[in-house]
Image (cartoon, rainbow, N blue to C red):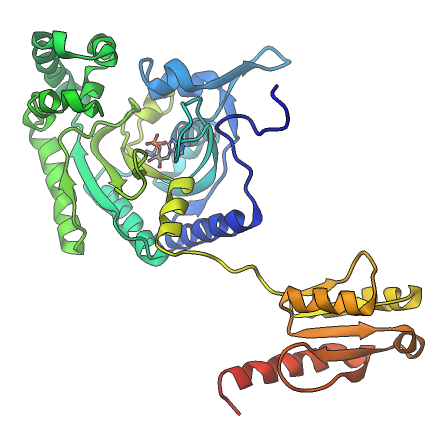
Amino acid sequence: MSGLQPVRGTRDILPQEARRMRHIEDTARVVAARFGYEEIATPIFEFSDVFRRTLGDTSDIVTKEMYTFTDKGGDEVTLRPEGTAGVARMLISSGLTQELPLKYFYRGPMFRYERPQKGRYRQFHQIGVEALGFEGPDIDAEHILMCARLWDDLGLEDVRLELNSLGSAEERARHRAELVAYLQAHEARLDEDGKRRLLTNPLRILDTKNPELQDLADAAPRLIDFLGDESLRHFEAVQVLLKDAGVPYRINHRLVRGLDYYNRTVFEWVTTRLGAQGTVCAGGRYDGLVEQLGGKPAPAAGFAMGVERLLALWRESGGGVERAQPDVYVVHQGEQAQRLAFRAAEALRGYGFAVLTHCGGGSFKAQMKKADASGAPLAVVIGEDEAATGEVGLKPLRGPGGQQRVALEGLADAVAQCLFTEEEDDDGGV
Ligand code: HAM
């Protein structure tokens, strides 16, 4: 343990950031709902096997990034590094394979023991969707359109779509043989990562960021040249729907994804505005995953976006959310006045007003300063005099009008009238 720092790769979310995050999540939730996706939540940890059996024995996540521990009952569990495997597990364990097709939306923290840097954390947040029981290219296109709509609703700019098809397992196997032969012929040029991957997951070498290997990866045998008619037709159909919808894309033959469960369509939304961690969203088809976990075969597709990365991009484009202001700030002095203040505040909250009751004492002057700073348009003022009569003072903090005395029973009406009149004035109305 090192002092009072948060664990490396984790971050506290302070109010301003929490508001922004909430805005992004809420906007995504609304978009997902408009497309018919229902919100679900799976546990933050699962039996480790759920991830081991699906993400790939040789994937970075399984080999080095999982937060795995044995719990007190002796079970080996893992903090979820991503959401898809857990949703597939849920489908099977909740008997939902009878109810396919299903469309789900989820959000929440994920955990990967990665080397932290800007935009890459050990605890981060994803928003994702999974559509299970859908075979056709339409759902792949729908997912991309959902993302495009979200970028639009958030006012995000400079997010580009990259697309590829990974074909079927057999098609990939044929490509792999040629790719390995090609890479072996150039083995001396490969870096350490490349040499290791040559034996374990050669496709990932295409994904290399090493500038010295770009020409080698560019000239490597392309997976698309190994796709059969069905896979090609599927890929073509996705592209037709994207073109119809006016969503521009670039086919990136080297887009392979770091998780093993994908087949056919895969995509990433990338930006150049965030430096090295420019992928804000990624997804694709995973037709074999549910079966691989022991369920009845269920074709499926989905995507997930990194909330921290979206947030950084949104901030770049000037996005922000103001702190919500209360309608009323209640100041009070004296014991009886405090009791009346609490009653008045609760009465107003009962009508749906946002009310801050001053806590922590202090002079009227100091309390009024706080009231002013809160941004509330109205103060309720209660001193000994008011407390004795059961009435309260109602004082506009912005705009014209003096303090008026109001009986507790009439307070909500008086507040409504002040706020309502103020809004009309703002609108230049009557
Ligand atoms: P992924 O590409 O591993 O895919 O992650 C999706 C997104 O999560 C990334 O594009 C990135 O924005 C964000 N992300 C990943 N790792 C980190 C990190 N360490 N720090 C910050 N952000 C990160 C998946 O997770 C798949 N489950 C997506 C999917 C859903 N495919 C089908 N359905």
